[in-house]
Length: 222
Length: 246
Ligand SMILES: Nc1ncnc2c1ncn2[C@@H]1O[C@H](COP(=O)(O)OP(=O)(O)OP(=O)(O)O)[C@@H](O)[C@H]1O
Ligand SMILES: [Mg+2]
Image (cartoon, rainbow over all chains, first blue to last red; front, side):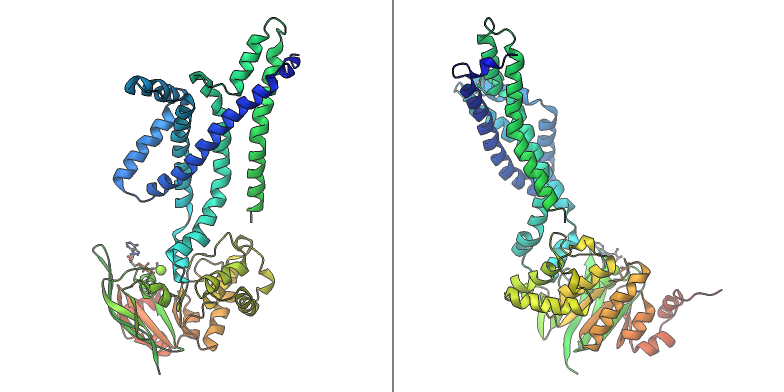
């Protein structure tokens, strides 16, 4: 079946460290996306024509462009244009954050406009200050709506890291391919086992996150 | 009688639309004033201007002699003395009934939790909802939600309470339970400004009726007088819309 090659030499450790690379890139990108996404999402609710136009174009670009094209543009394009080198990992973080910020901003915008005006007004009528209104009334409601949605985005990001091997990053899928290549003669059927393990690793990375999301959704149902 | 709330020459425009024009009004402590008038005449806007949810273009609103609108940085201080209950349900959906009631007293008035909970329970009991304290708003009926909204406003011990058609969104069988709570408040000598389309309720509770037409107060009279022999043609026509003929 091909599982034997997994534990040959340092193969398993290599797979794990490949997963770590993918997770590191996703975690950093997700963190950046959340922070920037909240800022951009709030800007989008200001109804300023210029900001609206810019963010519309931004969202459309992210929607239309395959992530791989973005990766190539940033990684190869930047090097060509400036002559200096942008590391593959940094390029990936830039592209993933660019993409994540757009999606996150759209989610934040959606959540913000879904809070009825009366929530702000009744807080005001009770004498709560603007800051108190956000802290005790608006933000808790936004977080409750945002978390399940953004967890979906995070898991999609982790999965999409499989693309970054295209610009030379050795992540888990690439390690898997290397193992298969290296054992082509001795274990010609290794592909199934290796990919099964890769599948399992992705699953183990994403599953706890979606469990957490389900748990929070349940908890906040009331 | 001592005047609590005073409105002097207040005007309000939305762009070019004049919604309130030269409103003058003085309300005494413990007085229950009911505002009636046809849809769009500016009743909600009047209440919203009084507690500063809308800026006004001219004139001023005074509470105990202090200007509350046009607002300044200290507006929240005076705003907590004016409670308001809205037509649509405005409870905080992520908080329980009890938490809804104690949030503002704890955060705005800095009262202790124990103190706030005690008072909330007393008031919830009074409106018959003490045993629902740990429910969330979406688990309550419309009438129950409005009673909680009234409790939440009372928790700030406001000097004036504003009610904007608080029963308009309710099923008919729930209207009564909410109006009874407001009648109870009138017995406790609360100062209230009530906008309503329930004419028999207006008749029963009002010390004074204001008839608003096209942004002006065109009648300010005793309820008996208003309902039996209104002074203006507009008011006569308005009251006729509530009568049914075979
Ligand atoms: N935010 C706003 N922007 C522009 N016009 C507004 C706004 N709010 C109210 N108006 C207008 O002001 C007028 C008075 O509105 P208001 O809501 O005070 O009427 P109302 O007497 O409460 O009516 P109803 O009985 O239907 O509640 C209406 O013509 C309305 O269209
Ligand atoms: Mg109204």
